[in-house]
Image (tube, rainbow, N blue to C red; front, side, top):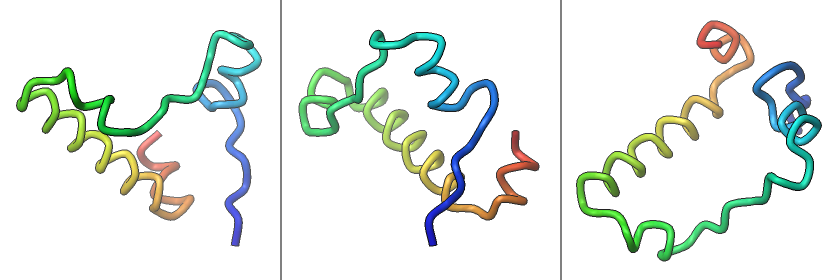
Length: 66
């Protein structure tokens, strides 16, 4: 079942409205991590995983975090 769109400040929609074409998708690939040292690479991957896990929670869980 598709998730409803988020609305309000801090959402992708709000950023697109305020920043227009200045925002572009980030290409995910090995080049993203190539220039990072091991500590920064692990920090980035940990944060990435945490955000994906947070996004996978229920609407109630997301509301309590925000």
